[in-house]
Image (cartoon, rainbow, N blue to C red; front, side):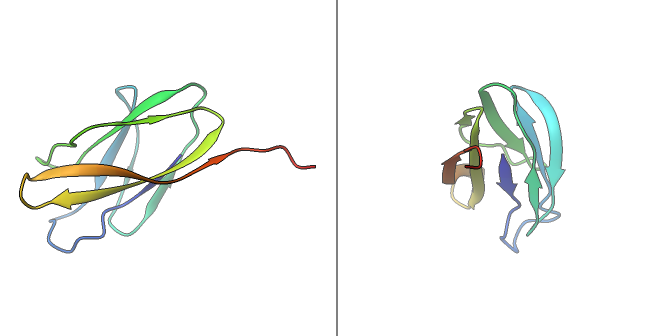
Length: 92
């Protein structure tokens, strides 16, 4: 799993706390990335200060999933977007 930190300049702090199946797996600061592995399919959610995440991303074990979060100024929520998903392959 790769989670990209926020890029918007309007958020104070901008550190995302990342959860897999409700368990904290780490934090990612603005303009950084957090990389971690999952052993089983997981629901990925985030929290950032008082800004709630709108929706979750279901990640599959055995796939590299890259997730980006955008801040929606109208709703005040963080909106997830899968930007790439690659099946992990063994070297030939």
